[in-house]
Length: 221
Figure (cartoon, one colour):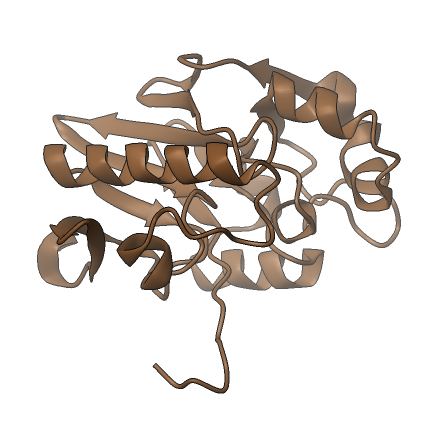
């Protein structure tokens, strides 16, 4: 990796169950998420469920348009109860503009709650007070969306205990990071990470006292 720059990725995830179109996180802006969805063959009206892993601006930026109208007019919204309750007390401008107006349309999740069949919330606190990861399972195949539990595909994995400036509770975030990475490596569960490099999906393997990232290629063909 170059020592003079860092390139970050922002990867919302779309899951089409056949009955629902579930979007995990919404990127930095409405224009960005609408364009990305169009590239994948969807319109905002196709999205039936919006799942917000947490309330940082790069995850809720595409929820509301510049006109103050929801970008996803047909969607139901889901997020962690603890996460929503925390940000509702913070006088945070982006939360107040994009999320608070939709409060009555939200279903609030606790650890182990179901979004739709095959998608289960799991507490992953630390990055934010109510940060959530999600288990996806279908016909015996599993995927773990870790959201921001790990924010870099090299140093977050090689050194899970390293502190990250954006982690609110650094000790809790490090413990969550190691727990989820160990689960993915031990059980050979594919992971999707919001800040993993394109395509944002891969596998975790143990390397020394830490872990390594193996990006998906033909494995999902």
